[in-house]
Amino acid sequence: MTKSRSMKDAVLSLALASGIAAAWTFPTSSLSPFLMKDRRMLSSSSSSSSGLMAAAYNEDGSPDNDDSSSLRRRDFLRSASSKAASISLLALTTSSSLAAPTSPSSIDVTNDAAASTSTPDDDSPIASVPYSKIYKPAPHSMDGKVVLITGGNAGLGLESTKRLAEAGAWVVFTSRDEARGARALEEVAEYLSGLRATDPTFVGRVDVAYLDLCDMSNVKAFKERLMNVIGKDVKIDVLMNNAGVMAIPDRRLTKDGYETTFQTNHLGHFALTSILMPLLSPNARIINVSSMAHQFASAHGLELDNLNGEREYGPWSSYGQSKLENILFASELQRRARKSSDWSGLSVFSLHPGAVQTDLARYLIGEEKFQKMKEGGFSSWTDRFLMEGLAKFVKTVQEGASTQVYLAASADVGPKDGGSYFSDGKVTPLKAFATDENMAEKLWSVSEKLSGVKFDL
Image 1 (cartoon, rainbow, N blue to C red):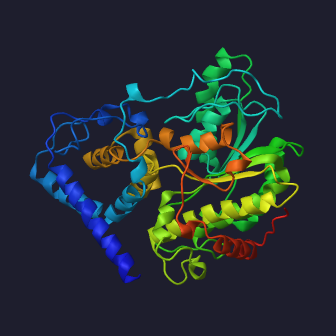
Image 2 (image 1 turned 180 degrees about the vertical axis):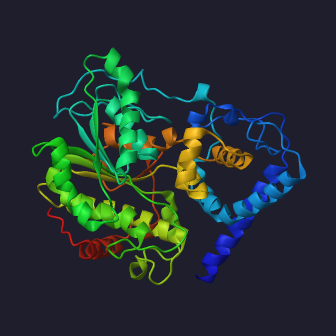
Image 3 (image 1 turned 120 degrees about the horizontal axis):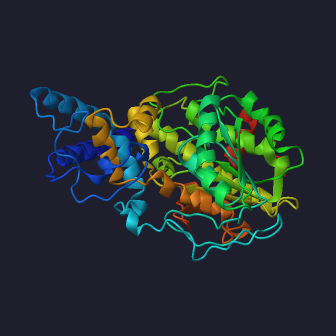
């Protein structure tokens, strides 16, 4: 690790550790409303005038004031300090979207005033609805559209699946775990059940397909599996490359011999997009879910000699490199499409969803414990402390999904915006290292070689 990178991590760790300690002693008069919410609403955000909790709590919610609680608080704060760089880096790189959580009564959760209820045919333009904090496409505006979302069994992918299907799309989401995919399918079905009961013209539909981005042979066979679901003649209108992993603590290799973050976040999606091109509509939209964390790579730009962490691996530096690769891939694909007579109508976007509460929680406490917390509620005061702290400066999953849903459904974006990077529904400027066409072309060539695919544009 370089001296500058080590210094940055040390400073950021100290900053957040100090913040946690300060929050621990901040006076509070009551339990935050966030903690009083139904346990099924862990991903929701709530306003609070009381700050973070100043005391430990037992599992039943009563104050825990014995001597052992002091030891547990000490151990927890030590553990939190070791995670501090992670949250601090995301907090710094998402400063433009870190407004204090808004109370539910003031959130613009619908777009009914601007919504059109007309039903388009396959060739009609998508209805226009202005971007909002929790963006929902107009009812029926996605009728006749087919959407494929990777990693749709949880988080941003699941939320995107719900909203696009709610607008009438046929959404196929992928999951690498069949059991989780089945549970997500049931959740979406329940979410849509009210519409089916009240709107006889509702046509939204959702299916799930198995995909393992860490297995290149599995990726290359996905086209056949997908055609078994949607048929051979159906075209995909939106491909949302959403699946990803974040800040894996140590360097791990896939069965193909590539670093897991690199293959999951970039190389697997690169190969998937290539093999699905024949199934895309000529005017399709491809959406790469990137992150402002791509700025972690700003010191050196894309490191072509370190794509697999072979020279140096760091959980956040490698994650940042993969998010930069998402951006460079999107812009290079758009440039090549514009030069193609067959794909001039293609629109390719990348985006920053914001620091999303569920993603950070999964990283901090682990996927298994996060799922148990989601299903069974808080098991300890440390769980409450963590989720309360995250709610102070990150987006809910509902808010985080808005930009990618907007790019999938809005009539206000199209080929003219192709290659652009979006945040909060707007085109956001990128620094020079993220718009380096020469580096994007080199990444393209290396990605084709490593994945064994070729784009036919």
